[in-house]
Length: 178
Image 1 (cartoon, one colour):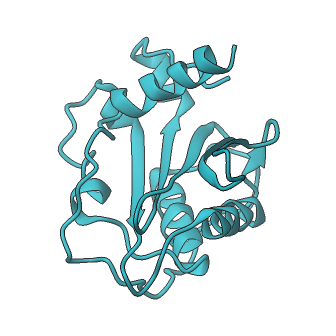
Image 2: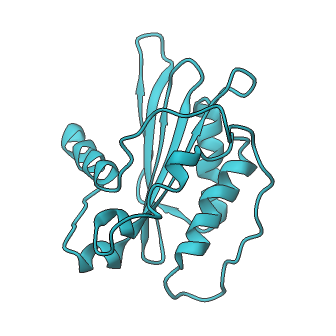
Image 3: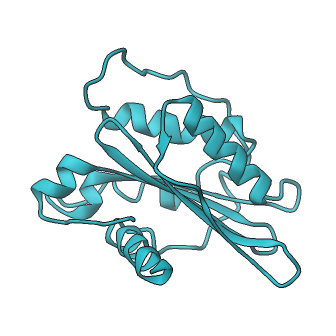
């Protein structure tokens, strides 16, 4: 069951072009959090609002800035493609700013403060030493689904991948995350 669920998450990540894992040294320092254009009400969120939620939550959690190649990966997406429905953030740790599961928990907390709701508890994989080596959680809000993921490495990486549910449905790109 668990592997089936995360296989579906992997399909979502790959479908939206998140396969890249390298990062250049540029853009790895935390930037100032942008002001949120969050509208009042219950209607669907715009891409601008979701982009601000991703970036501001990461900055507030102390995660280095979005990897330039990853942050803009959907800007050139062909209309009607799964990538055109999504937005991504990938923050790589640095020698000075390690990215660990505590920072991942912090960014998930920041997203919850911005009204992103968890459907269930996060899935965390631990090594025999009890250390969390990867963690994932699915968050939803007003017509969007987001997967927040942490992967350990020498300096760690946090990925936030959000996609608009109606857009994915319109192009028949059903992506199940749970």
